[in-house]
Length: 288
Image (tube, rainbow, N blue to C red):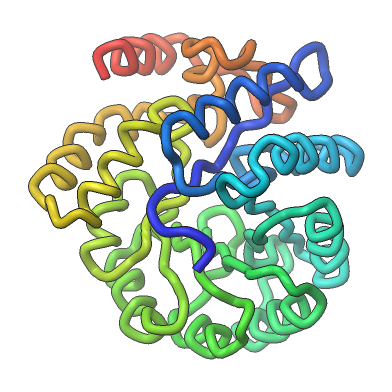
């Protein structure tokens, strides 16, 4: 597997319409100092759908320069076009990425056979390890556990980020593929339940601003301290709810602003966090 524990799905700081290099470096330093096990750039939380190709290159290069050889840099490289996804994967590989996060094709809503062909062709085009990403609420397609089990036979398909929120499906992923590929929680509220079922950790949004807490929680589980791990999972639940009170990454961008990492800028069609949700999130983050 590429990592076990916590990989932070990083925001992309913007300022005056451009990438905020200094803010991004500050965020990377914080992640490294907090002991996270990997980072993901250009995932959903990073707003890649609103970024140019040059900006994507900029973000990948900054992360690789700062973290290469220290912790894995995983790059979001999915598309609803197989050919476009392959080009994105090749770009990430050329810039020094350690792994790829490849979301299921969105909008097209392909069949399970289409998913198998999509990922098979991507895997054949790169030497990097691939984590599939199942998030049906955004893509409109759900990768079935039996489909991923077939994909797990491909040597460089090494894991799946499972964000359906369906614990029965998560358990089925682990049952069918857990001895061949890692299963990661895609929901911060289900990290320890997923690990308890045999999962390998979480690709986390909350760890953008609470990285040490989330890493301590997962490492406690791996150290056999289930009481500590489960207690931390329960205690962070109100904050997780606030972090997803509006569509991701709207709340976490505001939280990153409160923590001093960036000015909190979003790109349309995303809009600033509403006043009520902002008040709740600020209060919870201060207490947390």
